[in-house]
Length: 286
Image 1: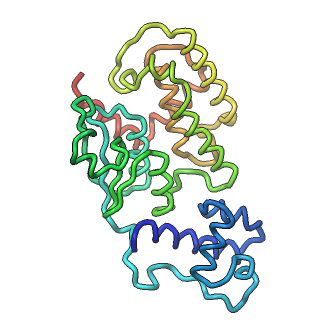
Image 2: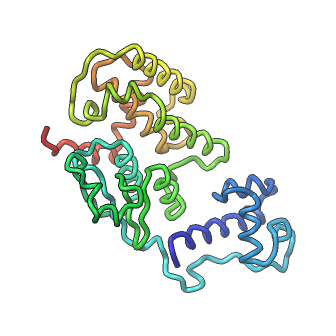
Image 3: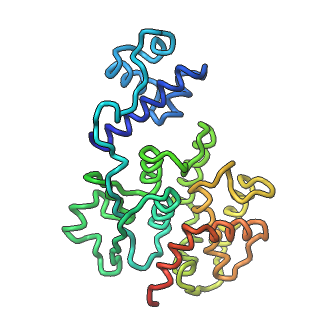
């Protein structure tokens, strides 16, 4: 069974369970289980079970729920992981996947790629990695890049502990925040690179554009972080790591960060998975 087939079967199993145990709308079930939309879920039900989800919910003669292992299929979850990261350990996105694997307790081999030497542009790496970027995750014969896609894949293959919240709206907010972190605040990221975070680099005082980006960052985190909490959602998620890295760009440089947000960033930095990444970064020569 390919990784894609395994993930789809897990989604189908979860959808069948929710249809039998809840009265949530079909659109909610589809989103909760990771289908692109309700029609996507319906087509999978029709192809695999020969009936639409609405009939499955009420039909007592529908096939019983079983696990892929019941069919004798090899488990994708048992295949080995390999992670390719930048050799200076400064990529926040490579850090995200490293932390995700570590939080889930999944063993993996770690490979470093020298970005300064353009190793991602070599024919060998181009053959391995579709987008020729780090992080690149290899799982058996399956290769995936882009950290947010990898995080969702890991949650599908190894659901516990979760990297994202389970609720439909909460997960949507998590995706919103991750997309925002990856696409906004260019001035701040340019003037406070992750060399500041991981290797103590120093820069000039923030420009007006970077100051505005910092204020926006503070406003966003203040808005989503509940009072007295160390994480945005009920449980820790990769969103907390992403926001903490942004805050640490400022805090590690000595720029002013509101006390509550500084404490939040430091709480993320204290996680064992983050400390393990930092220990790798500490071995890199300036």
